[in-house]
Length: 349
Image 1 (cartoon, one colour):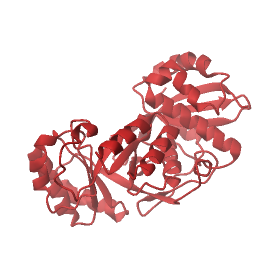
Image 2 (tube, one colour; image 1 turned 90 degrees about the horizontal axis):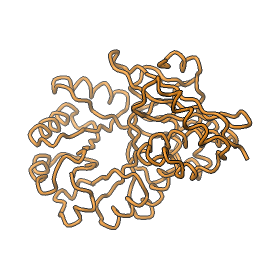
Image 3 (tube, helix red, strand yellow; image 1 turned 135 degrees about the vertical axis):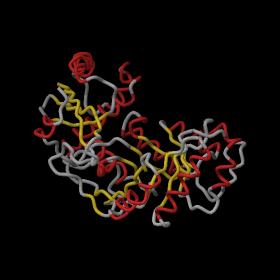
């Protein structure tokens, strides 16, 4: 039985298409007692200089544990409290397991249901005058699903929604992310203002928990509701309350790929569709999202990640992007290889 023998952390900063912007992540390298390695990615507010301290703290807690006993992570106190770290470590374990089995994770998790995963683009804050060019750029590349973040300011939100629709000439599929900005009793003016606009999904509109809105009559029956969840239990609660049509699974919030897969299975049993979200996925986590999406039948809308907006990654080969969709990589584990030269280039010492 393979056991954990070593752990390394790297803080990296990758450039985005806009030259002045970048995104940071923590990259993990997990090594077994057979010298096999697995890679993971997470996003934590850790200073680069603190990484040696975290390694010295965590390695004694992990060393000697089987890479196959992923549930053990929940028993380790720091991993219980830091879902992102648990997700990154579990990702590295799954990558290792897939490499040992010489199979991509989607094969180990039930088989590849789809070969390509369409992506959704989140519209950044910008002036309405720049919207047309921005939307044109991405729709030209096949990204037809656009996510619009709302603020809770009805006048401002309605203005931006209408500006997006006017600029897109109905060439996009629009998702609204309410970010829990509206009280259920106050949302009616927004719904009246978007009457006639086709919205694929309204995610997290209410400031209240979805179950707390069970008695609220959703006035826009033609707009499906989405609710972000972090555990299978939350999926059950939403299903029982009939509080949403979609569950939005943020892989990092679930604390790992396997819990995310469990959430999708429970959602399917409850008749709910699934949206996948890993908004800051920078390559490794992107591949993990693709493996999960590739074997999950009830994902019916485009998944959100940030990979397409990166100018560079740390992979030996960029993920295959065609017409707004990424191909599910079929190499062992996550399906990709890390370029150590790129890792050192973007490593924050």
